Length: 288
Ligand code: 13P
Image 1 (cartoon, protein in one colour):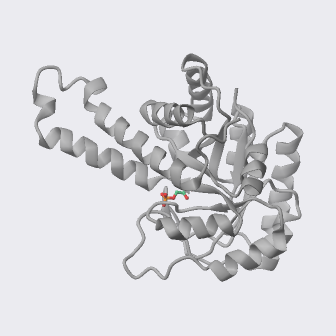
Image 2 (image 1 turned 30 degrees about the vertical axis):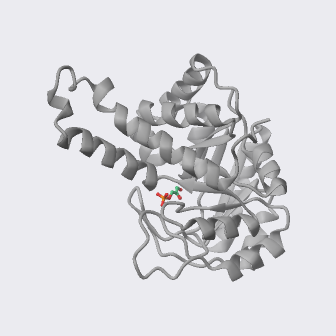
């Protein structure tokens, strides 16, 4: 059964660890993340962007696939199915389809409109037991065609949005989606600390988890980050393993062309990446 992300993130915040959100793209991806979470007894959040939702034939298909897979694989750790960077309309569609958590990303609106729309999404989501993530200060980089400028959030605006009753809050602190450029200045821990001081117990979300060095991740967790999103790193691991399989000519040997064989190294690579992140985030063994 899917659960809201609220309780798992409150536990993470008080236990000083973070739960990973791993974005899924297809059946193989979903299976790899769920099996790793179960093996490591870790809570987990499956992230689905609007683009990935479309690719997988809509939110209904995704929700039904995840629920059926959890039943068949006997997944017993807490799993939240979460809309990543949702539009206002997308958040309602995901809720109707059975998602247990939604992000409404109103960071590109002015603060007043962000407050208004976020309030509306919270009212609806909470009446259905669904958790809500909001965002202040656009996360930089490109994700599914949405380009964010890499803003640094204003701690007072963060407090305003947090006080609306969101369950988790994403704030731009110099993080970006995708690979970090060589001249990246790093995370703004001063801003993160100021946000935490103002928002207290609110679990904070770090987007753009790919490529952030381990020491920065640990420091971010110590300053109140309880959810870390990882997408590109799993894609790169999958790509590298698949490339190796083909470059070694394995697809040409015997039944090596069978998709179940062709995609297997990529799946193993996703599992290894998810395991590494769960160990770094400190969520291993926290399912109970
Ligand atoms: P990366 O692709 O940089 O890991 O970012 C993932 C993310 O923040 C999803 O919202």
